Length: 321
Picture (cartoon, rainbow, N blue to C red):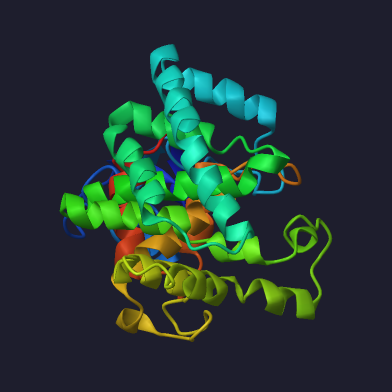
């Protein structure tokens, strides 16, 4: 339910749908719009806005409780059923079941030290690209309910689906979107070469353990480039999806547009999916909490791509709140 609030109650992540103002300080921003920084609040103050109406179902609420509480498994399932029809959810389940053998075969190849077969990844992405509209959004939602033995499989599937939808929102051509989907599917396969105990550890990682985890992009890249037909876009996504726009990422410390654009797209989708997912050892962040955190992380993401993700995927309604 929408609610009217005073300006002092505004915070990052809120979606403003209406405003009460006198118009004396310039043109009003186009509605709806997301409060993405303190500068947005200051701009409304200067425009002498008296009050605004927010939509908590699509953004942060007043006094939101932070990410610690998050959504439990049961809450998430109930919420999912309220957003999608039974038909959308069943179609999404079928797509997950149909793609599971291909993805698990790819993961098995990695664990056995075999060369990744691009054909299997392409078939999976073809299925995801055919899952359009509400079906795709339901699939991304369902994939967040991860059991212990499904974390890598469903994370890979969800990031791939997110990158396909984001690519379409950016109006990229279908060939490029297909490559984004394959890159999203394979981006974390380097983790399969790390000790399983390290990936499932619930306690805080030691510095040595953190450094080992940071080797997964390079491990994945070395693995994927053994396939003669592996596209460069897919290799770039695998190697550079943990680079940050301000140069503080890894493994190369690349900065700004030196980071290939597909990898910058992957960085946004990867972090969003990881934060909003339910795993055996953590609750999910809500969409508004995740977006608020990402917007409050200057230097991490390509700012233009992050704004496009928020505007077209969140505010635009591609992703369910």
